[in-house]
Figure 1 (cartoon, rainbow, N blue to C red):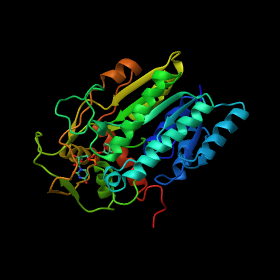
Figure 2: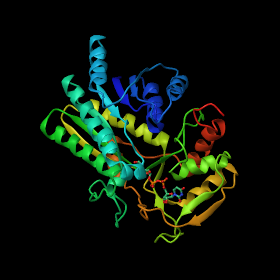
Figure 3: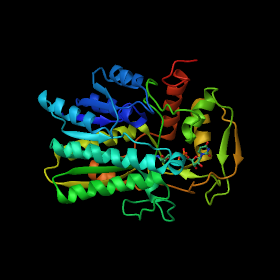
Figure 4: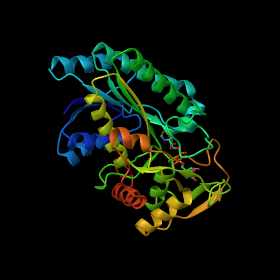
Length: 346
Ligand code: WQD
């Protein structure tokens, strides 16, 4: 087992990945600034796994924090062997409003991390990338060789980091894996950790679970005039626990490699679902009616995104196992037990 640094480990995907990594026996050090996450998540990660982790509050852009973190680990005789890098900004609309902030956190933050890693001889990194690098593709399913066309600053920053990583792997002794997420949803089946967006959710699934919890009234379906079977947008939704398991498999794969390596992997189920498929799936799984109204399309939305996950299966032996019903059941277990997320009920 290895000593790993998890940046952004208190976030939605980070916290679920930490549970899987602790259960696999890894030793974790989590760096998080809690700007879009809660330290309570780390308490619950430790409760669920029955193991402890070391949490450090800090900004991934802060070179002094990074240097101290790597140096302390080394001087304690437990150097960091690999990094899983979740810390970053991920709201598409916000990235359009404030692109420089996204370039600063997502790209300059990653550069600061890579520099600290290089200084301390830690050259294995799993990176949280995104399927939105594909822009508005017209042929499916999407493979890792589908041409990229990032149409907003969020995706542009993620692709820029991918290019930094592949440059390192081509010139130095680095092992890197850029994981292009499709649409992660759901929660740990215990209901103790889950997705806890700040404010009104931008994303479909937490919006639905907050309606079910009585926090929101009605879903606005952004357009039913897309060229899809029921006219609503299609996405490749995958259970966050499947995604967490993919990260564990990816970091193990990098640590086992005795040569430089640069991987780019699509992480999805390969089965796209429409907005109405998700609404009806949630209703069937929970017995809760989700009222909705069709409104105009949301600017920037694409008709369809659907992964070809064959490469992840070939390289990591990973494939998504959980169904829409599992995503809905587990997502509701979290939201119903935590109506206000990690914040105390008002
Ligand atoms: C899904 C579908 C909407 C909300 C997200 C993240 C992005 C990236 C990819 C990681 C679309 C429809 C939504 C609502 C709706 N993740 N919808 N009403 O846009 O695919 O992007 O996943 O990198 O960071 O934002 O996900 O959940 O916003 O939308 O009708 O209130 O649901 O039109 O078809 P999206 P989403």
